[in-house]
Length: 397
Image (tube, rainbow, N blue to C red):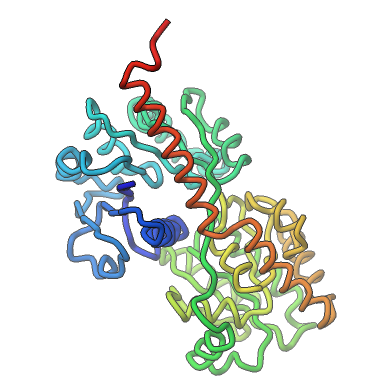
């Protein structure tokens, strides 16, 4: 098949959806499919050079919405080259541009929600939600309504998506999600990371890796770490990721206030082997998120054999808990402390067993190959149905 992903940006700092698209594209190409990307980025954005497949930059988009007048024109002209178009994410112009461009064309488009319909945002940011309510009827509602299908990573995400807006109509499909294994020998990757951060070599590392955003519960993580740090002198917290400058500054100030700044390392965005090295070098991965659609970083931790200490607001928490691949608690400071204390109470043999279970859970549930197979099944099934409909096999009664 020939597939086109349309997304607002290919900037790796945007978080899991970008990495998911990257990994999915590589896996599809390995299976013999053709994949291209289209984004609202400026053509000279430096990170575009890292795309593993052809990429068309249709921006720069204007304002946070990313309005790019050329996008719909390009999509209208080039969409007929593809069997299907996949819109990744909501709330920016790329979705509306795709809907407008494909109207009247026999090219189906799909929308990958990536957790952006979760009602957590509705309750946490009511003013932003009010603005979205004004935009919803003529914007995203129609994008979803007219899509061949709206794709979700879990059944829980699908059900929660129905709770955000009264006006909602979509053909829903669950296609899972996944990640890849570390690229090469974990010991080598670990050594590479510790070579870049030699002061961490003698420490037991807790790792947060992801976009630094209020929904991730980073403030709770710092409070929880402060409550256990004095009793565990070898413990060190690594914060790997980027985010809004003010949000990061507030967290750094909180670390000083809690007197844990010297027990923390802020690496900024880690990519490629340094990212995998951080995962392999860490004793545990921590994500006390208030809302997490899937958690690519969680799955990458499992792929590295690193136990995941997560909240029950990460939509794959049931799988992590059932497989004994980590610990799960509420998205509160007390819940985060409980996860950390359970992990610290394990002896060396039990920690090794949990690492083995973490990797086994990844292999059984979360490989990128499994996600790609499910996605292709949906796309090919729909393609056959549309073909039969066009040939007159299906008729209106």
